[in-house]
Image (cartoon, rainbow, N blue to C red; front, side, top):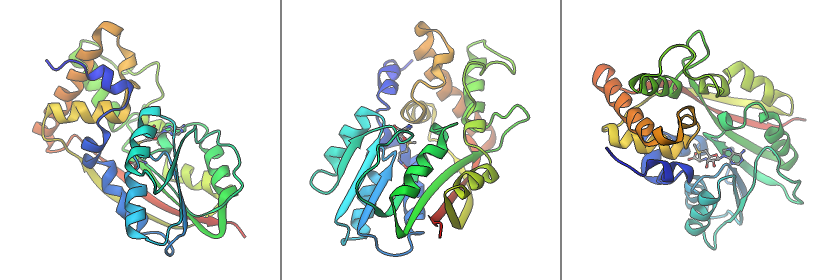
Length: 272
Ligand SMILES: C[S@@+](CC[C@H](N)C(=O)[O-])C[C@H]1O[C@@H](n2cnc3c(N)ncnc32)[C@H](O)[C@@H]1O
């Protein structure tokens, strides 16, 4: 059994390698929604800086690029990747201080489910920092929720817990399931409409697939960190991550995918 996943999960390490399974596939799709070449760009929840890197490559006229992320290790990775080309700050996007500047483009991809239930705070900051002709590009993940509101990664975590002998509908008690955190499209639209005007929304069905248990274990640890693993005792952490990989491999063998989700890309503009 592979050990040391927990240490990596605590730092959300290895994201660049495994995010190609899912999140990185959305970067160009989201950037394609920009209304025109921006000169000032901010990326909230910038992770390792991959989207800003792509934006800087796509638009040579960008003269101000700011990335913000809440995870110190991610900030270090992004700062190294974007050195001399962007400023990367550590910060909680639900509590960002006001800045004396505005942006033509603000992006936030694969982050919203982590802000629940305080998404509105991030949207208010965005609305206050968009230039009048600016745009906010947001991607949201919508797993198919079961009647208990669980879906996507919740189901993999539940399978993993079952492999460890923890079964039943209450297995995820103690966390807010991703199916709930992700919110419905209507709920996202309503939150955005409080402060911005949504003028584009695209959606596509994507399948999350992995080459095997090892890759999925690493994807889960780099993406979800210890969010689900906290459901098991400290001495069962490595077993949990191994079980996540095994659960995903079983799903791949049975269905040809770990799960499917709907991903939406939103473009919102300043009101008025
Ligand atoms: C799934 S990753 C997405 C990274 C990148 N935007 C992408 O599309 O690849 C989610 C990122 O959001 C960050 N994050 C989660 N909650 C946050 C918060 N409240 N404030 C700032 N960053 C946050 C995490 O640290 C992580 O880097």
